[in-house]
Length: 291
Image 1 (cartoon, one colour):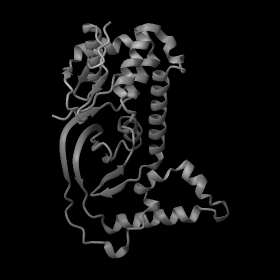
Image 2: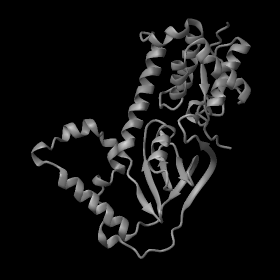
Image 3: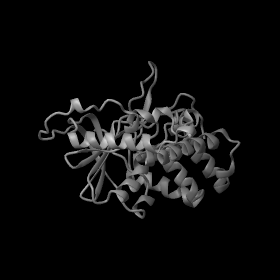
Image 4: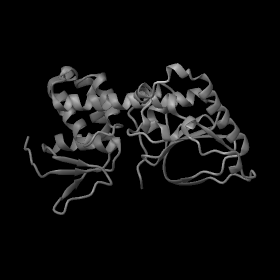
């Protein structure tokens, strides 16, 4: 298979599109040096080959992974796409090439840089999503629970099942400020949408009182003799603190304004329904793509 060092693939940023890049590589017997998602600046002399997303081609690649490698490898590829790893597309692409060549033993080839880097990135993703199951703080806006998070990885698909099951009779939104996306759950249906801009209304007196009570509870249960700031920073890194109610001292009683009709300002660009059952979550991740 020829190895052109200047071949660049460009795709729409979706999981389907990435699987089509793998399909194109094998069909045309070529190896790209870069797989470029949307938003990445193009070099002055770069000439990228656009890879069109095609469900049929994507399914052929995705369904071949458990047959030629393993189900564990298929799961690793799905999760790898959610990570914040630099050049994650190339990592997944080279991992699949190794897997199609060596079979299931690729999962144990930890001395290989590609396999090690992909597994390390996925571990970081799952660790971060686990932390957010405890670090998400909701506020009530007109009977809707709203939380803001700032993760490094794209954790919303992993948080969906947990929070939809925990708050199945509520309406809530978790806004990912890093990736400008939101998980919205209403009428027992979950949706993942791009949110270019989110403006929340002023909280009312009841919400501020609940925040005050939570902060008081947090301070009350603390045992002064066991306070260990260094240990706390290890278990709860400071990058999470910005959205935690117990570390926010901004809410004061004088800030309370008369309650008016709540106005939601959300600039929405695309939507995608998410699976809310464990059975559906076995299918490949689907993400909205900006039009």
